[in-house]
Image 1: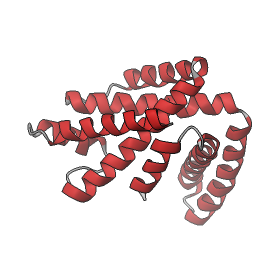
Image 2: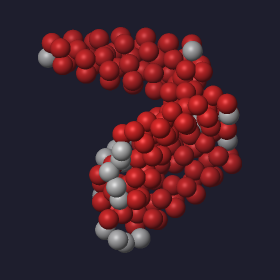
Image 3: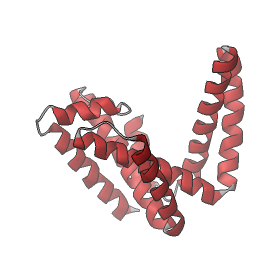
Image 4: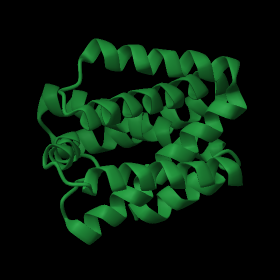
Amino acid sequence: LLIAIGAVQCLYGYRAFKVVLVFVGFVLGYALAFAAIDTMIHHKYAAFFVGMVAGVVAGSFINNVYLIGVFIVSAMFGGAVALQLYAIAGQHPEPIMLFIFAVLAGVLALFFQKLMIIAATALSGAWGVVAGIAWFATAAIDPVNIASVQKIFRAGDAQGYIIVACWLALGLVGVLFQ
């Protein structure tokens, strides 16, 4: 699923950006509401129901305030890039640097909307494809666990650098295709 969604996002991200906005809004709304309700009353079904409602509301809201959506999605992309750079350097991410990367990407997206949306969707989609393939092929990487990505670079072999090279190459193909 990660590979398929990543491929669509990599190659058609700009064209499908409104759908991506709604999806991101839904996921953020659901996750925040679910966590809050589950923490407060410890009832999974109530948390699920409130999360679903909050997800629909947040998805609708983020779609209606396009520029805020562009900022949020680009900020998430900036934070993800910062995490990858820390993984390549073999260091633990500093929260303030993640925040700076996220805000910088969000602000740049407001000035260069089309370019940033294309770059963000192409590179994040390419990461989904490459990380998914690497997970199936080697089982050495968990696409959502930064520690597993850092472990590949600490091993000293070329595997991590090959993954990054494939990610950047496929991201470039996605940018050019869009």
